Length: 142
Image (cartoon, rainbow, N blue to C red):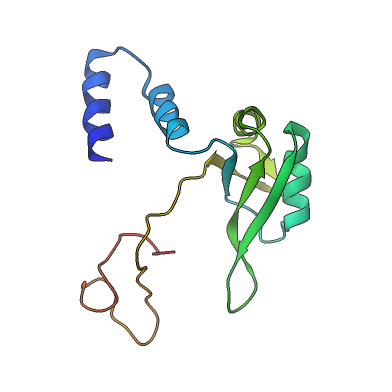
């Protein structure tokens, strides 16, 4: 990521290409292009309604809302897989920032989570000091 930040700042200084287009191009190259991340979802959105919302753009092979493993409640995000890259691209362009079930959603290409152990907070460990369960990642760790 440091490389793309440095490259981005150089290109921005020279004004050669719009940064949004450039970063989206890099993001597209680093993913299969068929899997979208959908954020900002209403807690009332389920797998079926998510699939229905995106099926107008092509063959949706899977739509999955991510839920809390303890409560079963939606975590407010999910993923949509398409049969082909073009359908995913069309859905991203059309749906990013649109309203779904009363909430404006964020749509982007899904990226693979880095492999390796994840640190878990919780009652039995330490958070933020890098001592127990790995280091502080600056996000939720999930």
